[in-house]
Image (cartoon, rainbow, N blue to C red; front, side, top):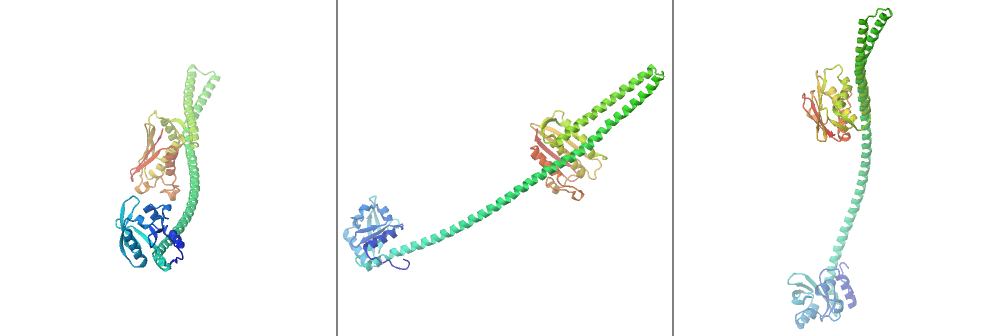
Length: 441
């Protein structure tokens, strides 16, 4: 239809084209004869002027107008004979009974109030006139078609963009899923490596503990050996006197004193050795398991520090423990032991390098349902730059000396993940370091 005029061969064809086309338009449209009969109206006109289907057969334009019939007839004749814009004025009867004035120019009618257009088409007896009258409608249809084509093109472009976007989203989602799976695998490997490192650290701590306990047991066992040797020597001496009938009352009393004193010495030192072995057995179990049990903090830490004495072998360094006697908690003693062990090892390796008399101070206190552990040494301290990375895995200032950079990272994970606590650190160069650990009791 583009660029052409619709040829109207019959009144039926005129009506069919009129209805088929104008029902898609938002403005009211009327198809009239020269005498004012209404042949057809579009949906917009039906709605605006409240026209039902059964009204169209007997409906005349005069029934919709308040103007005189002669004036309406004259206006219709002028419209039918001329294609020029003929000014006029009509007054429509609205559905609600009110009258609305319209200004007329040719086939186009515009309300004088809201400027909304309506279109009246003449159905003339001359086919050529009817065809020319329908040109205006064709132009509107072509405009509508162009708008529809443009809209469809825009919708097609939007659809294409949506499909491209959906594909990109699918591709990106697949990439993210692959990356997430790879990240999960890496995380599992990291957790496994971390558990392995923790076990390795525990076994290393257990080795140090064995050396410490062995060193401590040497003393009471050595004293027992000396006392038993002396008792045997004295027993042999007095036995010779007895066999020679030279044993006096005074000699017998001396033998009893030696036996009593030696027995007391051996009992005391063997008890000490038995206590050390018992403590070692419990500490060894704690170091290889995460079992929770009830412990007295002071007693447990005193036993632990005995096992850590090899750290201070051939040094002037010392440890000071401050802990009330009545702090009993149910926790994971093996985890606490490994934290203390790593902190002391860090002080020895890093903090006390070049320090003649290093001092480690461990202070334990209880606040409501939490244990506060304050660890401090008077060593070299930590620079601000290194302090920010102290808990990072593989960070160490002793890489060329065999440092793994995992000691403090293990401490951090043990406090956070095993004990469910928190840890903070403060330090300055040459002013020692302070670790503040808080965990549930």
